[in-house]
Image (cartoon, rainbow, N blue to C red; front, side):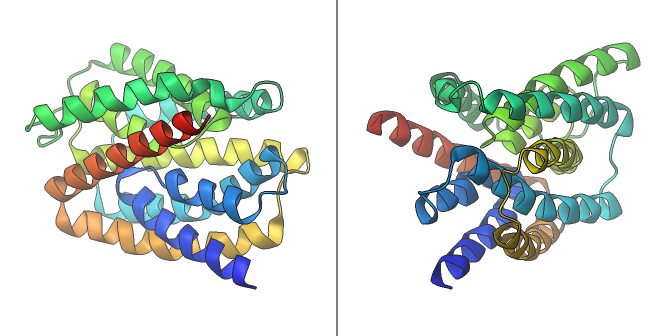
Length: 253
């Protein structure tokens, strides 16, 4: 009982954080590893994905109702991420995801520095790519980040937000909305794989999913209400926390 309550608390917190700036995996996945250390890694990842998709789906709907989403840029990335995430989840059973940590840590540090130093970063919504370039970049980034999400996961939403701002020219709120659509697809793909291989604890995942939804509703509404400045600050906090978590994990290894 205590284990379930603990996991639901962290799932709600993860849903809140993820719905605003990504990075919910920073909270939810470690909680699963700590509370259920006796279970295989693939089972914990699968349970995490099913719980996460609940909150992501609700956050996606919240943003779609209040924020204009650039579907021409978002849908190709979503389709590519859907396929690539399945391949990433498949790779988990073949390669230790820990090998990604040094590269991801370096990328997150670069993102944090760039976002902090560029005070106008994500403040204005000004899409800068023509249709052909948008399609190519959308498919490429969707595939790369989708594979990463299926294979490793934490920070996916933050990477997507950075790409939608830095490459496509979106503001923080629009980037967050688009990232939720793509992230929803990657979670679906990974869940299908983990379900097919029997790597989901459904009772735990469903209860955590309900808690995740609660957090996502509160978080997405707060982001829509507060706007770009709030999302930017929250994004920086999440990325810094991701850097600290990955750095700590690497030191322990």
